Length: 590
Image 1: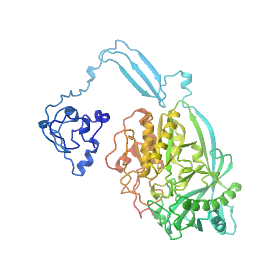
Image 2: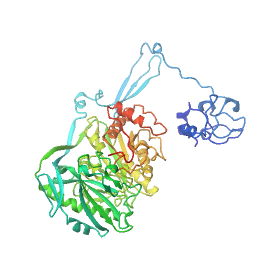
Image 3: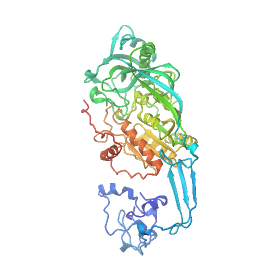
């Protein structure tokens, strides 16, 4: 693949290799030369062998071939009519620095991108100097002192209190109630719940305690917290959260076909869930398993999986209603604030969610935290970008319906404690404007249309930076890269977060995708069918946030290695004082 005129300057110092066979008399241009970014892969595949006699691109551009040359052949002086003379760059010694400055005219201004622009006029040995210096916490602002004191000042817009109520046990009985930290669920509730949707044929409940996890389970469709509003709307007021217990939805159709798409997590539960990750049950959580059987052949349609979620939500709502009035032990109060920090870099988090139809869907803004009823499906909304406050996300405004590969699936519990939302909202050096959810359509034309709408939204928000994430890989990487391009071409520094590793390597890219953060935790770099394994974790979030700061500051971000290497991740973890990313393989979690 040849290089373009736009990227020619970037590769002038790289070896000159013909991309295709070229004949005598050709005047060499960028279109004749192979992209140097592919050299490593070509050498590994045995397609290319560099030569110490080979010339650099800057030495051959505009020269004429004196004989025919085959593809992927280094260009040497014996096949050219001339070699361009290139002046070598000479490093400036300290003794050569100007001894005096004849005239200094300093102009300072602060741009909307959080940079101070400084221009110094003619000096003795230099025509002038222009600098763009980032305005960041601790930097001296070029504004009046009284205004500078307000930069970064915290202004609370909304306050949410999440009261975590201790639950010590769960039982099945003849009535649903909560007493002394024990949830009892009416066993017959499944008979009523199954009537919520005709596509759901059977439901079964059982309780799995932490020491009982080495049992078979069908594919894990979702992990959902038990949370309910007791005051205010989603994103403000008071929410109660049952602590120490979650619902887990599993499902098959009437023929026993697992409800899944790219990989299924059926097997022994202790081997098929990454306990402790944001979307999963924690190590000591009690799991209420709701197993659904849906109509034959409906598992790969939108209505089939939705029926299972809808019927389970009927059961969860009965527990929510009891939790509203239960005055149990509060193990902790989580104070969540939507804040603005005027003068700090304005940033957003963009979360690309599944929206391809079939079994790829999500519910936005239901009536209850992490619920189903009252919400709208992003597919039905045309997958257009929808902006929520950080608190709305942390209060369960997203219910995940998707049945994609288990390891990269962000389940409902993931969103109510999304590490990137938590990290960005609490960072006092940033001004988190909001969280944008954008669906990933199936058709390429729709992908482009939706991405353009996202670009317009990003531009209108007058941003200084953005982090863009996507769950899964492959089809939605097309949108993912488009979104990064929409931010980049508008001059917005952008960081991408995704599972790529070996199996999910990006097949598309653009010049703005230069700051990428890897989520993979599988030893081989594959979708390993372990639910919640390769998603955003606190460590991934910390790396992404720091990379965004570096990008906004203009700090050089070195190109990634051609192949995924977990040592690079751990080197970055070490810099930030984070623990090593320990890779796993199927069958080793317990």
